[in-house]
Image 1: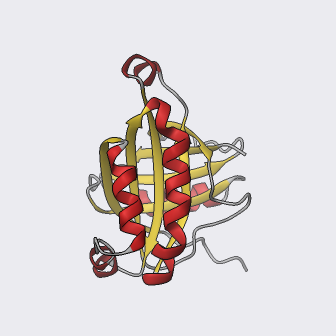
Image 2: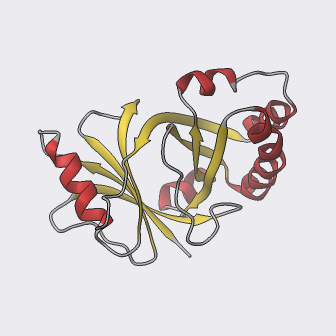
Length: 188
């Protein structure tokens, strides 16, 4: 199943965020709506949809088509609470399979040591720019208890971090930004 990741530009008032979340969660295929915390503009929101999910009409957004790699499992939804870090990686194009394999090797140790959960690692559809530059882009979504847990998880002595160092050698650019998951409206 393919996914769509939207970086939405909101109206000036914060009510736009609540309205967007409500409208998206009512639509079939909406997986999650995230509010900015660190690294995103204050007028942005992030929406992850599966299958044929489409944003509400007149919503201004930059869209990315994604394919899941090792995670998420079909039908999975991000668990509530905590802080989500969305990390975009630009890597050497021929290294995508190795990058994914290394991630899968590191995750068991990483998740066992820290209060964290990898929700998904997605491979972005190859763009013309990717082809010209010989690169590929991946999006990693990780839930942490809080930003303190994210900081503690940077411990370079863990087995996971040793594997992540090899993954870093394949990485041209990494951009990690934090956000929070907006809850689904309660159904009555």
